[in-house]
Image (tube, rainbow, N blue to C red; front, top):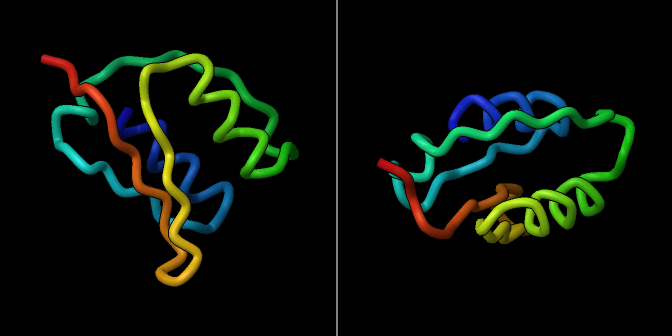
Length: 70
């Protein structure tokens, strides 16, 4: 998830923050068209994973939380 978060951050110009470093070890193989809105992407990711995505409009970040991986 660490690489996915970094790529999404570049595409949408918003930092993605992992609430737990163990989330970064989770493996996901995803294909998305980066022309969809950030909100559509977050909804799709939430549905496809057991992760939560909290958008902080004040600090302009997305925090990813949930169960990490070994």
